Image (cartoon, rainbow, N blue to C red; front, side, top):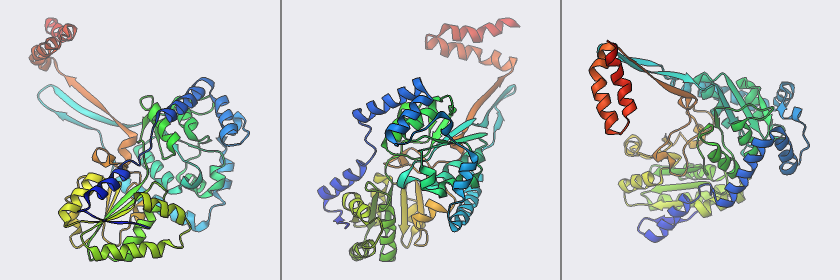
Length: 432
């Protein structure tokens, strides 16, 4: 089910790593053309376009009044969720909220010289739009991870777009929304949902930022509307890399690889180890544990195409490989976990020790599970409170300070060929 590759097999290893890197959502010309047309329809025809897309793509006849999910329907749908799931959601919300409270940022001010005050004002965005996909990717945990940091940031209005039937198909999502106090929900999905959030329609408000996962049409739409609105990221398929030494239990490592692979056929699950015996034992455990999984076919395809057990000569080589992959999730199960972790520069989140599987981060621990994928950990970070805030620079100069610095300003402005800039500073010297 999963192949073992030694680092000395350079060509074979290079092909596998290239395959893993190539999993990102392919925003090809045909896809972008199709999504551009959808966005144009929504921009020009508003609610009418959304209703047409619901009939054409979702097979549902809707009227404008049906676009917003009324609060009674939301609550009655939430009531259908399993009681144990609701209790677990409440615990997850509590933990996620506690973690993100620590991400709060405060406005600040500094005095550089006499008569100069500089600073930044931190303020929330006004309106956030959270996209919640339907089908097998409709996760209540993602609702928690997107809504909680927005609430802590102080966003005054949070709206949700999700495909028609999505809440009925997964009442736990409705339960998450009710527990979070979010009641402005619109039954529109896909690229048309993103377009509606970005540009607004007669029923749906235009938001300032869109977050939340989705399929390739959603990803393409987010790419196209970026600039009109902010977005969290253009997320690709999920991934985990596990660094493990001979102290790791093969059954635990195999379970964690399988957990990642069941996300989807394009998920990547990779073990990097210095021990050949562990590699063989984990491969055997993957076969054993994977044999009766409900999503076995998905798991098998994921591991065959994008899974690997890579045997390296030493931990230096393991860390170099991880930094090259820059994974969304990194698990470390070894003797010196902290030491290994200190050598990792690029990872969305790091899970230390055999009692910290990636699943604890997906659901309950507190840190956000919306993480950079596809090597984006080289330059981006987990979703957080700061994603729903903006920073406004604040400047105040006194008469004396502008008198002192105006010649410098004018010199630099003229060096750039901007005479009016120079005069706007110098004219103030003539005023006294």
